[in-house]
Length: 375
Image (cartoon, rainbow, N blue to C red; front, side):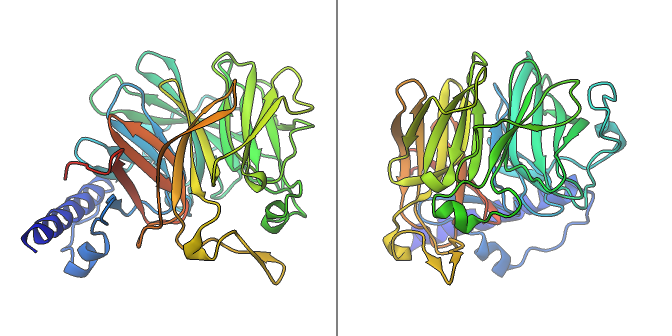
């Protein structure tokens, strides 16, 4: 009992500190945090939480630093910056004048930065352009459908963010995930085209595709041959010769050639889970997602009255590493359902800690690879 009380006390202090950090970052006056609020964000037996993240669907680590960037898949959720050393989080993009450095030559079709009030960030991708300098690409649904582009200066102790432009999506098209090549070309995956639905890709029908934007081209164009059942996470190969797409309806990763994307090169089904986002991290190609056949949810995802189940029932999750040459998966971590956390959609490693993103939750989660993390 004493041990449980000590853990609860640490959890409450952690919630209070996190809330104070966020209030101060956005210029709000701190208020007292109630015991009920703290209890709602208390750690679960195997996960530690930072609350207030608002559907943190995707995550990227700023290379060589302790900092993580999480998206916020809700209007106004924007981007969150997480300090993995202090387990604290704050709203990062504020729209302040010092965060606006529009590259009008590179992004001429984007007249204004995203609105802080509506910025709705889903998939993100980070690319290093020189030591300590990076580009962050964000699929935005708030106010416009576009890939927002930011510069990150991580040469100081705390990184600085600047919006530099955007690449608008075609009318009626919403990007799910984003990836880039070293020459600045952007790839955006589209989960469902107009006239198709989630139910369609759960049934294995083609619904989405991959769109390409090239510097100077002005507009995204569909790459014919990349249409899959639920085009989800996307990533490019380090040599720029291939790209990898998650076909959510198939629970698979599909590999295409950049030179000829008209037909897939390779395909592999994930072992027991539904991969969502896919990213390189320090030489590892990591994927994460919910369990496919979850006994606690009655097994497989179901179609009820012609509509796919929303997967709000709490499913377990897996994190795996993929070798894109052999198409072999290696499980890094997995677990069963958590009582307060669901919808795992991405993951990054920081030392021996595994940080999890979720497209459903109101919090960021972290666990050790063997569950034991410092509190």
